[in-house]
Image 1: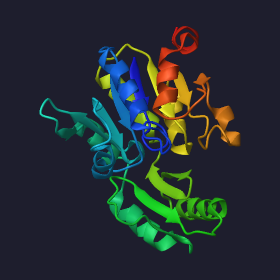
Image 2: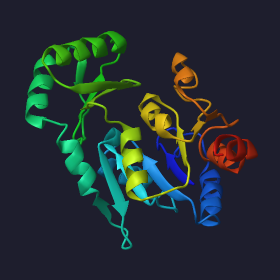
Image 3: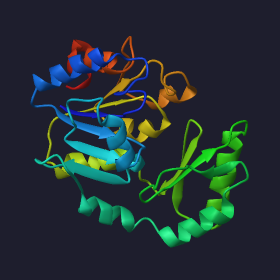
Image 4: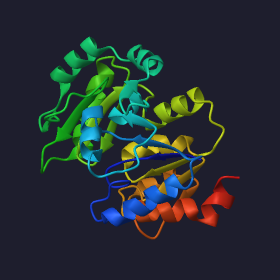
Length: 250
């Protein structure tokens, strides 16, 4: 199994006790043929910062920046970026043009996310009290009229401007193929930026309190298993479930 999980609200759930994560990690330790990848909207530095001190089982790979970067964990515990994937993404990301367009066309009520340096994407946030749907559509229209070939992804109050056609699923498919893995992909997540990941998975573990399950977008998720609880407890329930194993992975 190639287990690919979102971080915030999924692997790291605000209402999950550390003991539930220890049980999930113990299961992974007893099942060495599971390849573990985390796929997050965070930057590498942000992801490592939130993981440090909270996990004991580090992933084999990290997909960061909403799928615009892939990192591999070395034997020494360092992280090396996948340069083949980085070069492939760079060809689809005209940073000078897009930075200029973004600065010119960011609507009032939208600002850069503070404190992060995103990689091959533009990370924005909508100010409180503003209509994110209208503002994101306004931004999308402005960029389209400017000739920018990008995708505008809305997750909660955040807006990411991404290379056209790139998302967590793009990175996951590239990683899975480059590793020559034949095991099925089981994707775990809770929000809009996980939809791309879900689209390439053999089975999906959908958090029952996540934005996808509680919104109209859940119809976009196929092969979904919804555990009774969110976080590590739900992930463990899912990967141990005969329903997931035999109905969705065969």
